[in-house]
Image (tube, rainbow, N blue to C red):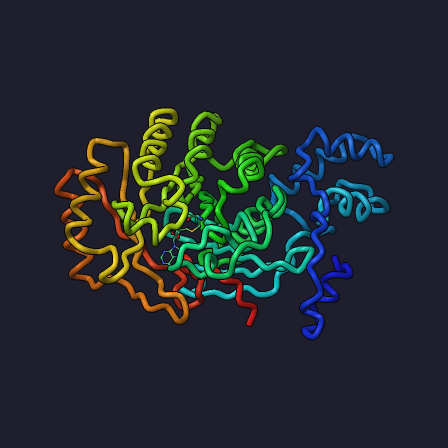
Amino acid sequence: MTNELNDVAEFPELKFVAPRRQPPPTHLADLGLTKAQELCVSNGYPKFRATQVAKHWYGRFDSDTDSFTDLPAAERTAILDLLLPNLLTEVRQITCDNGTTAKSLWRLHDGALVESVLMRYTDRATVCISSQAGCGMACPFCATGQGGFTRNLSVAEIVCQVQRAAADMAFGRIAGGVGRLSNVVFMGMGEPLANYNTIVTAIRRMTEPAPNGFGISARGITVSTVGLVPRIKQLADEGIPVTLAVSLHAPDDELRNELVPVNNRWNVREVLDAAWYYARQTKRRVSIEYAMIKDINDQEWRGDRLGRILRGHLAHVNLIPLNPTPGSKWTASTPGAESAFVAAIERHGVAVTVRDTRGREIEGACGQLAANPN
Ligand code: SAH
């Protein structure tokens, strides 16, 4: 799909033209099946055309016109334009880890850029998706946080990232042959809980079985947040048992105020109380994310303090070696500091894992998704 704005984006001298904030075209994933059926009827097509399209798109990851052989050839393009307008134009896909990690840069209808990363492991395949173009949370160690906020993504813009990754797996386009997408993590660009209603609807499309969704287990979906307390509580009561990840990064308010500025609004205590409420309501173990930053938050005493505030709760610590952003004065912790930190947490009986660093050389690793098109 081309539109005026995409064309403008091709002319760098016009880049200061104020971006137009027209919503993206409405898509099957925005509508849900019932409304999509109504749309078909109001456009003069039988209602079941929507079901046919949805079975292909959610159930078989088809998007190529030729695959929709059960739609009348004469109407195929028009029906697909109506229900599956193109929302993500692939600018580039780059791979690493012997082809098992693939980062995609997408251009949205208004020229905004977002990224997603597909990571294939022996026993699962995970796509890391974006929920916003840019991010307003301003965490100083995060590449997206440095770029500021552009806009929220729509339901379909989020769901389409999952559909593309599922298609890459299903059609054997990722090293390792044909496979199935099993996991989705909201750890790409943006703060998912700042786009709350949208991500909740997107999650329902991911979990409901075809023709309403992809049928991915809610347990395989992780929502990662800086700690928007009222939204964590709301999500806890939503009845969708996704995994919650809280980006803690410091056990004390003094440092967390700096590393995760929203801590000035909801502090460590309040964020963890909300996390424990989430764990109680969903019976799901909460993941505590902690980027290990050399000499900033990786002291043994902080590990001890972290263990102390988490002990006895349904929690699991996920240490992420810092991926320094370009020009950053910070670097990742040394292996020695890391193991002392791990031991300090474990002494409290709290489970810890160190996150692997997939996608580093393609800037597809945590916090590296700055969507620099060059
Ligand atoms: N806004 C959400 C989700 C996106 S970031 C959140 O903050 O949780 C996903 C995870 O990557 C977060 O834990 C985030 O703090 C972490 N992260 C961001 N930049 C990073 C970096 N440079 N190195 C390591 N982890 C980083």
